[in-house]
Amino acid sequence: MNIYDSIGGVPAVRAAVDDFYTRVLADARLATFFTGTDLDRLKAHQRAFIAAASRLGATSADGNREHAGGCPAARVTGESHHRRAVSRPGSHEENQ
Image (cartoon, rainbow, N blue to C red; front, side, top):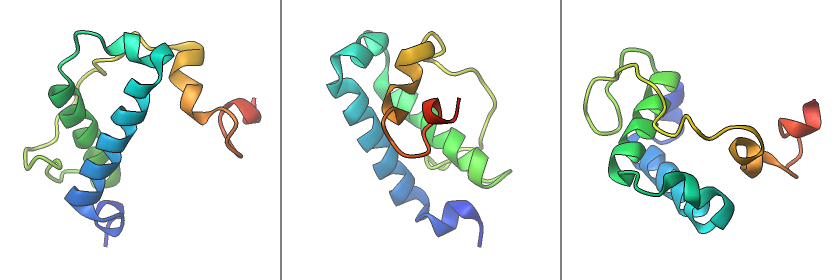
């Protein structure tokens, strides 16, 4: 069994991505980075990334072949990018 299947496959990835963007958009400091962004398209890219990272050569959570490409939110950097990890044990900032 690959990582993708062990975490629950399509339903789990879809739920995790939806929850992630719900939390990000609820934070006024992060939400501004996504103004004017096609969230359905962004979520599809995120699901494809998770599928690619957890099972090479598989289809994405949307049933399409995975593809390489840049992150639509590439302008998110620094403190904003790592905001969700702050104050969690083992977070990126704690390890620096």
